[in-house]
Amino acid sequence: MKTIYTLVLLFVTIFPFAQNVPIDFELGGNGLNWTWTTFENDTNPALEIVANPDPSGINTSATVAKFTALQTGQPWAGCESMHGSDIGSFAFNNSNCTVSIMVWKSVISDVGIKFVDATSAAQPEIKIANTLINQWEKITFDFSSRIGVFPITKDQIVIFPDFDLGGRSQDNIIYFDNVYGASSNTGFGNEYINELVVSPNPAKDLLNISITNFNGNLDVQIFDLAGVLIASSNKSKINIEFFSKGIYLVKVVYGNETNVVKIIKY
Image (cartoon, rainbow, N blue to C red; front, side):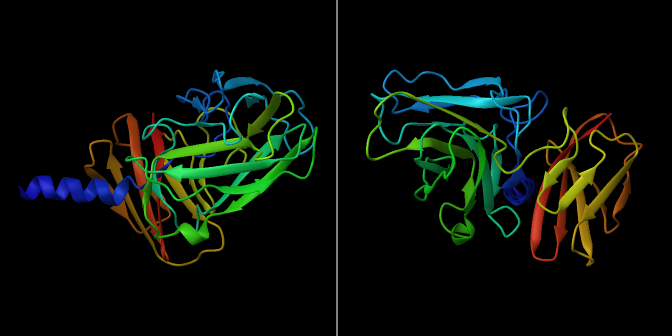
């Protein structure tokens, strides 16, 4: 019984902070191979992952998401990730409560985002209207008021690309991309959680932990996917040369923040 309790406590401690972001829809990134479901959109055409129709301005990435909001759909028509394995499980803290999204829209209407827990409990979505049309625009949402608010642990993101209570006069096509920011590389690349960077990723021997604007003490723990502690350190450089090849979770505690980054050892 003691062993079971320890494992349960360990998973509760780790996995609320395992967040798969940014959602950039690129090959090897997040979002491209997720299980997206559309809802309240009449016949519910699927979310499409397509070539960027306007690779200019703030968004020159290769691929983006395309959502077709039907005139016959509800104002709150949208799309949602699969619970759990897509965005992962996480809790809001000071380092992840600012959420941005890039949108390309031909109309002005609200864009809404909300996060849901495994039982489908959620606080209401936050909505902000775009101010530009026919070009990429970045919209930023402040979820700081949801820190420590039920439901604590989220495992699903819901996006409302064209939340228009006034009703649509035609079908609207909305493109969106780079939720939580833009990745600067393809493949797995370095994992970014705001100011925390764990690199290189994938890694072969030496793992570097860097945090911008932070010079305090670190507490680093590395777990395998079974939740077994493999190594711990208070250093910013960790030798993983003798680790077996595979996926690991690097838990970093610094100041009042705790984040977990997924890495690959090759």
